[in-house]
Length: 397
Length: 130
Image (cartoon, rainbow over all chains, first blue to last red; front, side, top):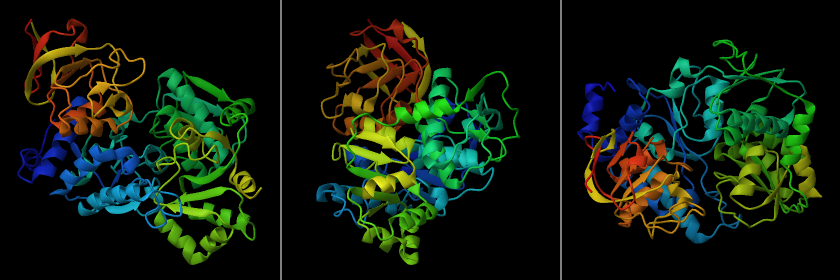
């Protein structure tokens, strides 16, 4: 890989220990994936923030890097293991909270904006079309590549941190035009509406791509989609298919930039949607937990929940997971009061995937196919998928 | 016998090989406090990888695995070196942050458990010395 003089100096340790370590990570990845050079990134989003995932090992590494490491570009964090203000009300123990704050303090010391969200594009860490970035959260990677048309690989925690401390990433993979071509065509022959249904569609396409050993789908037959529907779709197709980029006809910006695939074609019909929806609901589920906001709820979704909950009382534990800046808008507008008066809780900075809630509930109802996957695999819950309206209905039943 | 591969992380180590045909997930698959493989059904389940040259085809699993490797190093439980057929990003990053010599592009079926190896991560070579 060709390095500039400055990059070589960073690698040689002339800019300090953390910079040297970061350059070692980036240049090694560049060599492995045959990058010709580094490319400037305009923003970074770091995963591996929850202490539940990091553990003492990750925390040790962050502490060491924070001794002399300082970010060179705008950087935000993925969700943490708890709401940083309201953790006690959400049943998080004091020891966990202490360790979680140690991790966030290490990130803060490096100059990272410690807003913890899987939807950086909704809270000001937002690239424009064609910009190079280094993001780690898989749903956000998929959203930025596909819906915005920015360019990022799926970074891990350390490689995203390295990109933040250098302000660059090796130029390979999704940073290059030749790797952004769709490989499989999916024709959707049924109406798809709502965050839950877009999640169901994401699972169908994701599962199929894994079977085929392919990564990039081209999707036709979706006449329109909201930001919220696309964010749900991204989370699902990334979870089930490892997909970091898709093209959707007339919807995503690069849909006609590359050739439309014609040799591998699949049709998705109403019965496929019905069958997969049924797979995302366990038999004999006893629901004692409802959670909306995977990926983090937008202000639009919070408004909808407030309208549905106005004057009602929830009978089950009900979390709305969102970014703190979005929660602050909800506070200002008055949505938060309506929601909290109904007995539902905000869990800002965190989510039901990364919070330490394994086996705390029996059954979870969500509007997210991604949350179904982690509810089962990580937290050992039974799961049910439904629309936001159906989730609220369940919570007040 | 000397085998030529690709350098992933610098440094040299001489130790006994422990070889598996299975991929390894450090996160959840290896206990960083005991150095033992704990993945149920793994070919190396119950075996210690501490201080050995760990030879396996490739990594798998969560990216948190890089941090598990770092923790093993801090606990003095890490392997002495790593040899892969094809490196993945989790193990590569794990070796860099933990400073474990690492070489890939090696036909790992040429190596048997118990053989002594010299791994030269700076040159990208390994030598089987018995």
